[in-house]
Image 1: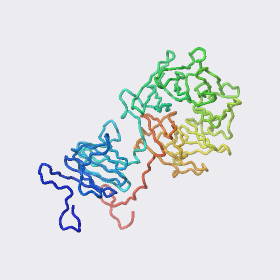
Image 2: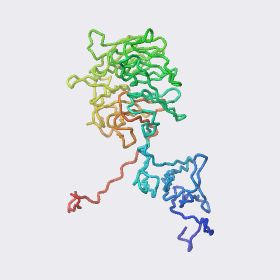
Image 3: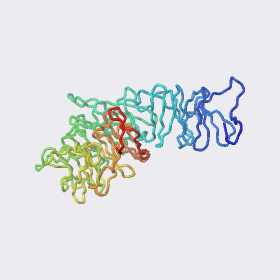
Image 4: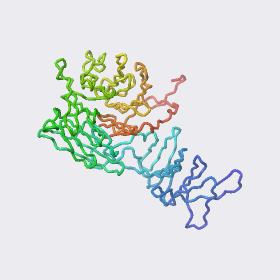
Length: 509
C-alpha cells in the first residue's frame, strides 16, 4: 500500500514463506472505507477502517458463508452496503454487509433472467446503480434492482410435472398457499412456506365434456374452503389442505347440488356466508355450500330483455346491498340484493351501439368512478355522479386497448393487465385529462411472464401483493416494495453514420 506521505510501501499482509504467499487480483473500497481484496485461489480478504491487517473473510452465520478457495477476478461495492464478488467457475456472490447475508448466483438455462456465464472477469457500476457483469464466454450481463420487482411462476422455475401456463384465475387460501386455475391442466398450487407444488385435475361430471379442467374463477370462503368455478364442469368446493372435493354443483347433480349452468365466470361474497356467482347462460346464482342453490336472478328471462343479459363476466361490490354486474356484451347494471332488482345506469357506460358491441373483461369500482376493462376498446371510466363516460385508449397512454384486469394498490394506484404488459395508472380526479404521463408501463423485459395476460387472472392478497396470470405463467409483486429506476442518463451523440460512413456537417443535425 503506497501513501503519498510515505517513502516506502506499507504492508498489511506480508508473507515470507513461499508456500503461503497470496496472489491478489483485485481490491475495492466500500462506502464505509473498508477494503475488500480478492485472491487467486485463497478467497476473499477484508480490512476494516481501524484494522491493522487483512483477514480472510468467509461470511456470516451458517448458510451465509463464502468458500475459502475462491478464484476472484472482480469486486465491486454498490454504495448501499452490498459487495459484488465475481469468481472464476464459482459464479457471482453478493455480500450484504448490513443484513449479514450472502447470495450466490449461477447461470441457469431454465431461468431466462439468470446471468450469462459462471466465469466472471469484471464488474462495473453505472450512474443509475446498475451492475455490469463481464464474463469469459458469455458476454455481458446487466443487473439492476428495479429489474427484480416482479416475481414469477413459469415453466422455467417450477417442477416439470407441474403446469402454470395459460392462467385463468388466482387466489390465496387461509394457509397462504397460492392457487391458480389453468386453461387445460386444472389447478396449480404452491405452498410458499415449505416450497412444495401440487397439481389437481378433475373428472367431467358427464360424458361429452372435452375439457373439465378449465378453471375460470377461484374464491376462498370464510371457513377456508376453496371454490373452483369451471367452464362447462360446474362448481367444485374443495378442502385446500388435502385437495378433496367437499361439494360439487352442476346441472346433472341431484337435489341441493343441482344448478342450471355449468360455467361459473366469476364469484364474490354475498350475504350470510353465501356466494354470488356469475354464469354464462343463467345470470346470477346465489349458493350456500351446505344448503345448495338459494336464488337465480336472470335478466334474460324478463320479457323486456334481449339475449345477452344472462352472460355475466364480472361482479363488483359497491356496498352491503349493491353490486355492479358486468355482462360480456350488454354493458353493466346495478343489482340491489334487498329488492332483488336490476337497474340501468344513465348513459349506458359500456354500450355504444354506433360502434358495435363493447366486449367487457373486468370492472373496478372506486367512488365516484366505475372502471370497465374491455377487449379492444380500452378502458372506460364512468362517473356515477354525472353519468358521463370517458374512454381511455392507447392514444391516451395505454400500452394496448385490451384490459384484462384492474387492481388497486395500497397507495391507490391502479394496475392494469393488457396484451402488451402491465401498466400503472395514477387516476386523476378529472378523467378527461388522462395523458401518457399518467402511466408507467412494464413488459417482458422487466421480468413479466409474457406481454400477454388473460381474462379473470388477477388477484390482490391481504398484504397488498398483486397477482396477474398470462399465457406463460404468473407474476406477483407488491407495489409498496417497488423500486423505480432513476431518471435516464442524458444521451450524448458523438457520431452519426450514414450508409456506414461517418457523417460530417458544418451545421447542427
